[in-house]
Amino acid sequence: MFGNLGFGELMVILLIELVLFGAKRIPEISASFGKGIREFKKNVNDVERHITEPEPRVEPRLIAGDPLVRREATPSEEVRPEPKRLI
Image 1: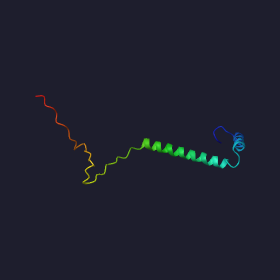
Image 2: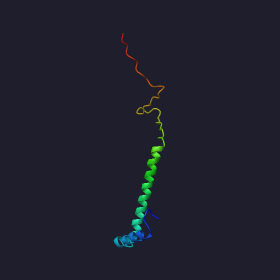
Image 3: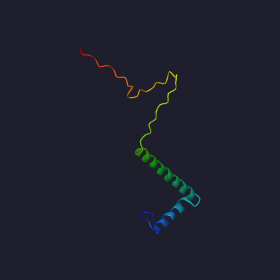
Image 4: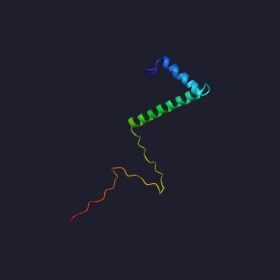
């Protein structure tokens, strides 16, 4: 069944839960436990996807005439300083 737990062990665990928490709280506890497992799996999948998929390259959007927006130079347009002359 669940790992190395048999039917007898599961019944003992459920009986202990019933005594400790009561019949009214068991559905709430089960639901929150299920939500926790779903959230954990979702986060693990997000991390795996982040590791395996490359980051999408986002190009900056330029607004024409906006003096605060500076355009990034592409490698072919990159301006290099002139080398210093020794003589």
